[in-house]
Length: 152
Ligand code: ADP
Ligand code: MG
Image (cartoon, rainbow, N blue to C red; front, side):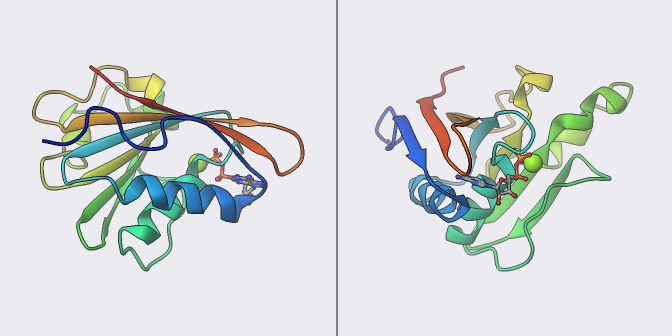
């Protein structure tokens, strides 16, 4: 079994996107298939930048950009990786809940932007919530990132 908390738990400050990507890469190194990381923070805080850094570290080589016309993207890194952005989930409220199931599972690592729009959706078969990351503007290109272990 893994340690109870992910490494890097606590508050971090980055001075630019490259540092945010590097921090994400360090977190990614501790992840296993089935793990889900929730990433919150206002628009422009750096959520997608964080996911990009994590994806690179997991061997994803293609473009990593915010999903726009869909709630998520799936990438093939060294393990399958999902990137969900639930910002538009309000629009999708009438849709099939199985929509999320396509992106979560025991074989994939998943990163979820705007998780507050779907609290509780990570069910027993959907993956294992391992960390919550919150990004906040801290003046100019500085960002404060708070990494907390996630328990159901
Ligand atoms: P979000 O997904 O939260 O809306 P993005 O990652 O798409 O945010 O955009 C963040 C923007 O802020 C990018 O243009 C990025 O280059 C810029 N940026 C500046 N400083 C930082 C930083 N320290 N960490 C992350 N992004 C930063
Ligand atoms: Mg984004």
